[in-house]
Every structure is written in structure tokens, then in C-alpha cells.
Image (spheres, rainbow, N blue to C red):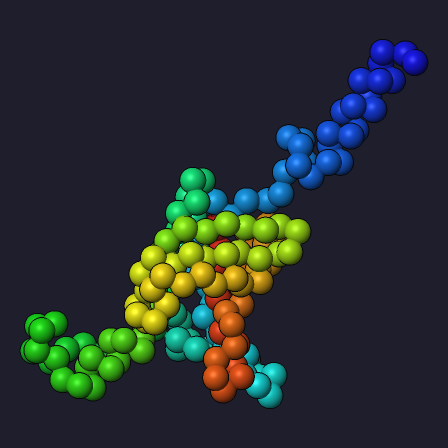
Length: 163
């Protein structure tokens, strides 16, 4: 066999092999801004889960750490401007108007999943849990689905990569 042909075959094999250097899976590493925090209800309808213009950020580091923050924009302000002296209604709104968590993550491109190993979250029951979420990545658009809620609705978070 001629050396050029062998080299060409080797390069083709590397390019087509997903575990080799030339064919890279698109990365979610970076900073992402929230574009939608919706919920798909059991009847299939999709509505805004955190109001019409939620705000949020997701950061994924190259060494496997992450933080996700989602906030409703019309959050109730505390009347006394003291976080230690809120009313039951103000505390309830403060909790229900946000979804945050941080920890470590891995991506399985073959399965199309992100595994979140949650260190801490705004919902204490999620602390120390591992949650696997299906995701799609199309260019600079990242979307994932959360496990169904008890009522059957499925939260969907969508982000755009910040450049």
C-alpha cells in the first residue's frame, strides 16, 4: 500500500471516530442566558412557567462545574426591606419565583443527556441528588427538560450562549 493512501485512511478513521480528536461533540461549556422557562402541561399545551420574561443564567465550566439560576421578573418586594422580617406571602413568593442549583455535571452526547449532580438548590429536597435531563444543542441554543412534576407537567429551560 502506498504511504499517502495509508495516511489518508488513518485520517479518515480519526475523523469518523467519536472518541478521537478530529470529530468533536459540540460543547455546552460556557455562559448561557435564559430565553424561556416554560412548562409543557399534561394536555400538551406550553406556557410560561416563570412569567413572560424570566431572567436567568447557566454557566458550565470545562472542568465539570455548573450553576443554573432562573427567576421570575415580577417578584414581590419585601415591604420592610429586611429579608429577616418578611411576611409569609413574601417568603412564599421569594421561594416560588426562583429555581437555582449548582454542582457538577457530565454530558452524554450519545444519549443526549446532561447529568446534574446537585450540591445545593433553592429547593432543599434536590440537595445531594443526581438528575439526568435530556437536552438539545443547536448551534448556540441549549434546551433541556426536567423530570415531570407530580401533575404530569414538564418544565423546559432554554438558553442562548453568550458571546
